[in-house]
Amino acid sequence: MPGFSRSVGEITPWDDGFDTRLIRNDGVAPSQHWALTLLPARPARPLPDEVQTFIAAIPAELRDHVKRFAFGQALMLKTLARSGEARELAVAHPVIFWLMIAAVYDSRIPPGQLERLSRSKRIEILQRLINSRSRSRLKFLGKIDIDTGTLGDAHDVTRALADPVVVAAAAHERQVSIRLLRALSAYPILARPMLVRILAGDATIQADATLCRAEELAGQVVDIRRMAAALGIEHPDQALARCRSSVDIRRLHDRWVERLNRRRAARDDPAALMERLAGTRSPLRPRRRTGSVDPDTDEAWAFPPPPLPDSLDIVAIRSYDELRREGIAQGNCVASYAHTVASGRKYIYRVLAPQRATLELKRCRKGWTIGQLKLAKNGAPAASTVFAVAHWLERASAGVPRPGDESG
Picture 1 (cartoon, rainbow, N blue to C red):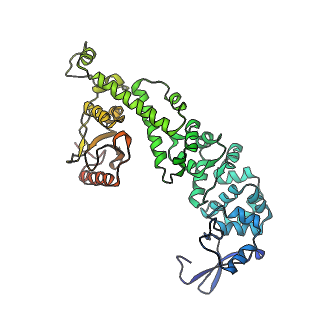
Picture 2: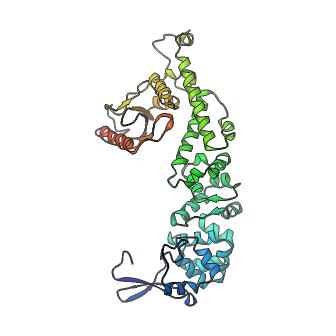
Picture 3: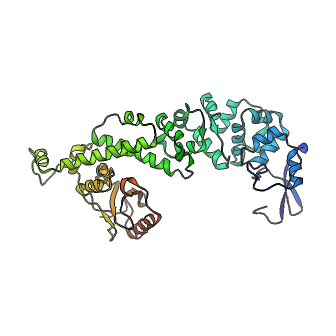
C-alpha cells in the first residue's frame, strides 16, 4: 500500500460483508478509507479471472450504481453489503449516498454512522451534509449529472448545494453537470438563470476542464456592467438577457467597447473640449472630484504615480488620455477603469513584447499582483508573455514597500 512499509490490503468476499482490512507488520486492522477503484467505468485492460469472479458475486444492480463513481467504491460496497437500507438509498438516490461516503473521507461523518444514517429520511441526510433541510435543494440534487465521480467532484457538488444563489440559478435546468456547478461556484457573477442557460448549452464551455472559457465569460459580464455605468445604460442585464449564446455576449461586449471608445474619442475633439470647459475656473486646473465618477468628465481624474518602474517592454499608462488611447488601440474597455486607477486600487501598463498586450495590476495586502493580461480584443496571451510579465513583476516588486508600510 502507498505510504506504508510492508503493508498489503485485503477485501473479504461480498457474502462475508465486503470488509476492507490493512495487513501490516504481521497485524490485521480494519481500514475505512480505501480509495481503490474496484469497478472502473472503462477498464483499461481485462481483469484476471479470479478478480472477475470476486466482482461477479456483487449484485449487478449495485455494481452498475457504484461504478458511476470513481471515488469511495470500497466503502460504498462495504456499506451496501451490510445494510438493506443503504442499498435502497443507493438505488433510489445514488448521488446523496455517494456524498455520504465522501463526508466520511472528509471526517464530517463517522464511518460507524453510515448504516444508521442510511435509514434516515433524505432531508435529514441533507441536513448532515450541508446543514440545510431545503426540499428544493434535495430536488436539485437529483438533477446533477455525475461524470467521473472523483472526490473533487463531490466537493464541488457539496459546495454548490450549500450556496442558495447557485441552486436558484440552475434550478430550472433539466440536467446540471459538475463543470457547470464548478463554474458557478468559481464565478458567482455567472449564477443567474439567463447566464446559466448559456453556460449549460455551450459545448466549448462544458468541455473546458480548466474553466478558462467560464473565466472569459465572467470577465465579459463584468466589463459589460462597468461599461454600462460609463455609458449611462441603466439596465445592462436586459441586454444580457437578450443574448442566446456566449458569442452573443462577446458581440455585445465588443459593440459597447467600440461605443465607449468612440464616445471618448469624440470628447477629445477640440471644439467639444472647449465647450465642456466653458464656464470652468481654468482649463489647466481640472476639478478634483470626491464623489461618484461622472463618465462625461473622467479626464478630471489625476492618476497616482505608477507603483512599479517601467521596463523596455512594460510601460505604465500615466494619464486618462493614455488609457483611452490604449483602449482604442487594443479594442478593449480599459478606459472604463479610470476611476479605479485614480483611486489607487489598480494600475494599467502597456506591454510591448513578447506580445502587444494590456496589463492590469491589482493592489493587495502583499503589494501588487496581476489582475488581467489581455491581447487585442481581450485575446489570451501566450505562455511566454505571461512568464515575461510575471518575471518583470517579481523583479520590479523587489524593494517596493507593501501597502501601508510606507513611512513619511
